[in-house]
Amino acid sequence: MKRKFAISLFLLAITGGCWAQADSSSVNQLSVGLNLLTHGEMCGGGLPKADSENETIEDRSSFLFGRMRLNVDYQRQGLQAHAVIQNKAVWGMKGNQSLNLYEGWVKLAARNGLFAQFGRVALSYDDERIIGTNDFATAALSHDVARVGYEGHGHQLHVILAYNQNGDNVYSGTYYDGGAQYYKTMHTVWYHYDVPKFPLGASLLFMNIGMQAGVNDTKAWDYETNSPRTEYQQLFGGYIQYHPKYLTVEGSYYRQTGKTVDVNNYASDIRAWMASAKATVKPSDRYGFEIGYDYLSGDDYVPVPYGGMNMVLHKVNKGFTPLYGSRSKFYGIMDYFYESAYTNGFTPGLQNVFAGISGKPVDKLDCKATYHYLAVATELNGLDYTLGHSIELEAGYRFSKDISLTAGYTQMMGTATMDRLKQGNSSKRARWGWFSLVVSPSLFTTKW
Image (tube, rainbow, N blue to C red; front, side, top):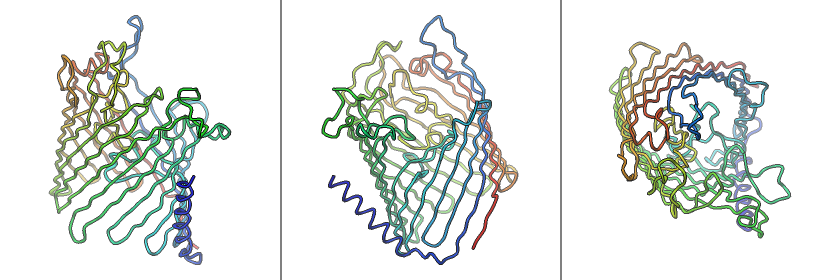
C-alpha cells in the first residue's frame, strides 16, 4: 500500500506541475484523418504436421485482411489528446466483432520539459526490438499505461506504469486473463541521451513485468492479496547508435532474470540474454547496404523424443523472449521463430546473420533484398545448428503522400533441424507472398 501511495503522489506531482503551466488561452487545433490498410498473404509450407497421422492438413493458405483507423487529434499549448478507433477483420468476417480502441490518451506538457500521459498508448522505443508497435502484424500493439517523464537538452527520461485487471472480477482480487496485453503489471524506466554536436545516442532500459501464475485454486492462490500469485520478470540492457554521414552503426544488449510464466500459467526461473549489432551504409538516396548479427539465447534441452510426446523439465529457462517488440523487423518479415512457436513451446534460441541491399531505381519506388542465415543458439543432440536460409524481396511504391503500396516475397530453405523442431516437412520449403495497400487521407483540420 505504501508503494502504491508513493507512486500516486509522484504522478499527481508531475501532473500538477504540467497542468499549472498549460495555457488554456492558446490556439486550439483539431484534426481528423483515416488510415485504411488492405493486406493480403499467400503462404505455402511452414505449418506443423497434424497431431494424428491419419489427419491431413492443407499446408497452404491465402487471405485478405482489412483494417480501418479513425484518428482524432486535439492540441493546444500544454495539452494533447489523441484517439484511434480501429476495426480489423479478414474479408468476409461476419459483423464488427473486432471494433476497438487502439489508442486513446491525453498528455500534459510543461515548458520545462516535464510531461504526464495517461491512457492507451502505442509505445515505441529505440529500434523497437523490445518495445514497439509491431505494425506488420496488422492488429499492432498498444498498452494501457501512465507515462511521466522529462525531455530536454538531449536528455529523455520516461517512467511507465501499467496495472491490468479484468473488469468482471472486481470482487475476486486482481485476476487478469484475456486482455489487450498479457502482463498483469509493468514498470518500465527508459533513459536516452543524445551527445551534443556528435552523432551518437544511447539508451538504457529497465522493465519489471508481473505475470499471473496459476488460476483460482489452492496451489496458486495468494490468500493475503486475495488474488492469483504474481511472478515478476526483470529485463535490463541498452541500445546505442552512431550515425556519421553515410554510416549507421547500431548495437544492443539485454538480459532477462526473475520468473517467467508459460502458456499453462506455470512459473519457473529465467536466465536469458540477447545481443545484436548492425551496420548500414547509404552513400546516396539511390542505394544502400546493411549487414548484422542477432543472438538470442536458448534452452539447454530439446523435446524428448523428437516426436514431441513430452519435454525435459527445465529448472531454468534460458530462452530469450523479445516481449513487446516489432519482431517482424528483425528476425524475418514473417516472424517465423517467435510468433510461430516451436513444438511444445521449446525455445532453442536464434542466431541470425543477415545482409541486405536497398535501392531506388526510379522516383517513388524503393526496393530491398535481404538474405538471412538462421541457426539455433543451443547444442542439439544429433542435430546441426543450422535452421536454414531465407531470402526476402520487398518493393514499395508511393503514389502520393497518403497512398502507398508495398509487396514482398520470402523463400525459406530449411534443414533437417528445422524439420524436427517445427514438426513438419513443409517447414523445410516454406514460402510467403504478401502486399499492403495503405491509404491515409487527412479529412479535416481546424483552428480557433
